[in-house]
Image (cartoon, rainbow, N blue to C red):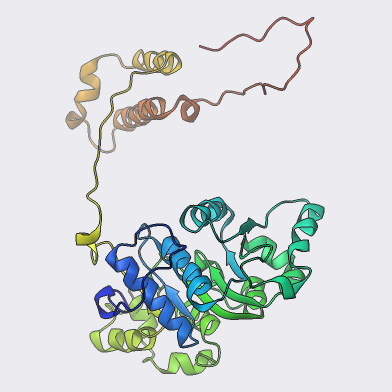
Length: 353
């Protein structure tokens, strides 16, 4: 892998919990075992598998294992972008229905106040009969409602798309760093960036005592390492790269699709031909009339790059693509809500083609 342990380096010791419903691929099982070993050693880590390799399911396997095999039924806090919150809730319900998961979401402060009643009695948390085991929220709310979250001793704090805390100058980074939690896990499909400041921000977040000083951290490397990584000095040499990997290895696991290709299900592509809708055909014919002849589109080789006709034709091709993808891309149309009550005395709105 890149800057971490390869999945073959992690010895499998634990089976997934009985309450975990699903089958882990071998590399996912290795990742799950790596997460368990981090927990048992009191360490935090970064699971940086490439997007699509199942970081969510490996995390759910860990949380269900802690509940069943370690007697730790949360409370677990998952912080994710708003766009992935629903996926976390549905995946938790699918793979581990015995664990109670609640989404903490909503613009109305009173609605969130009702949700917070679930942890008004901290002594009731952390058992199979607790009001909840996993709470899923987003980065915005966890900062705005910080004082309420800080009252709970979280067993695990999981940050999805952890590049959201890459700046140590941000309020978000400082707020989450102060949260009372036994363990922290960062999930990111983005390889560690070239910026030493961003790398230190993530490493300090998971191991603040070890990566205490940014100055000391940068002193590990020669002064030209950052400029080399950014392409100003011809690339990072092998010595510098190995030094970076030595630092990251105990705390970060990254596998790419290339690393685990033999374990992935073969991708099946199916082409489905679909006719144009009535509205698409209308726009398509309208564009078609702008082309004086079929040969005009085919004869691009005769046109120079600077020829205005070429630019005009290329623009026309793009318009055709928009129409074929979806007519709304080509031309927006305002819709009337089904709950909209119109004045019956007025004539009906014309239906566009």
